[in-house]
Length: 403
Image (tube, rainbow, N blue to C red; front, side, top):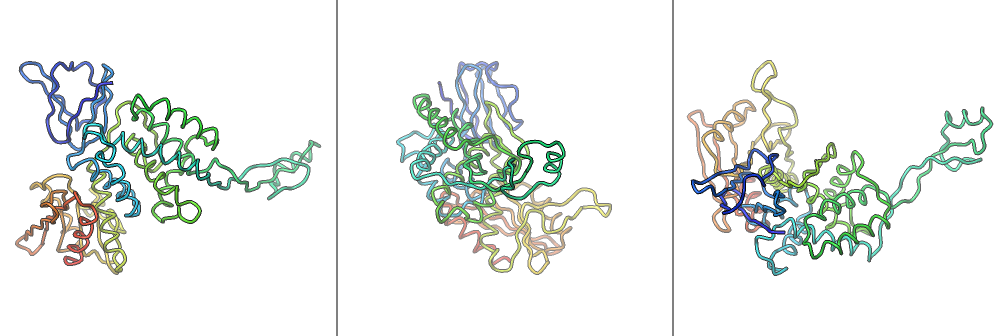
């Protein structure tokens, strides 16, 4: 399989490529360009991931901030504890595996997920509890009166229906891992495919895990955020966070409401950055009586009739009052971004707002200050995402000063 590489936000030219091999279902943010000599160019803006082309090759779109910082940002955006985000980012560094940067972080995540599965099966699988309907001659749990009454009236054998909580390996965590393994298989090297396919089959046999159910992803994501996977389950923490990343990369809705499968595996990088910023702000300010949410704790609209809702990426409140608004911009802020922020400030009745971008200066945050004639202040904070821990510290410090 031939691997073609492009970088987010930059035009990549591919001599000899035919436009016919490019899927027609590409996202709007992936543009196809043609030079006078008919060379095809690809410009991906705001998405990263991989695209299967019609000639059997794969186009890998790398994040503009680097693969490892982007992966760590994804993990923190999923509310993974900081130690997991940083440890996984380091363990997935291409340098560790002796890989070139074009191999793609999708490959790295997929490989580390399968390694995690091997570790789970080696250390032992955790059981969960499931409610099962039983039928017997006597009650073995909570009786279901309607079904039992009907069976008694019909003089059926084993007429007592009851429910019981039984131990099972078919629970939310194992179903999420099964779905992630199935979707990670196409990302691994051809030479490793047979081994990992066999591991996937072994996982199915051992866990008997079925397909994802509504709510499974919500439950696992909430438990990961609450650091629920401790005690007898510490080995599940990293593996489940990786599974959430894989499912997000492959287009699975993290709210469990829809499943999208296909050969075009693209992730919206702006959404990843927004989730990261909101989580970083919540971690930095949440312990000091601040409430950090998307859009605020109550809905607001631009007009008095309730139309045109106003929903900033991050709203910081204290004692029921909005004290600051933030918008995450995975780009250099434009005039329209500033206009939007000033509108947010006017509607929510607050005098300061922040536009957060990934463009720091080395290891330092870059902060710019703007002020309107009516004393509304807008700040731009550029974050140095090369060092995620330092980036979060700088953001929390800057926001604490501004709030």
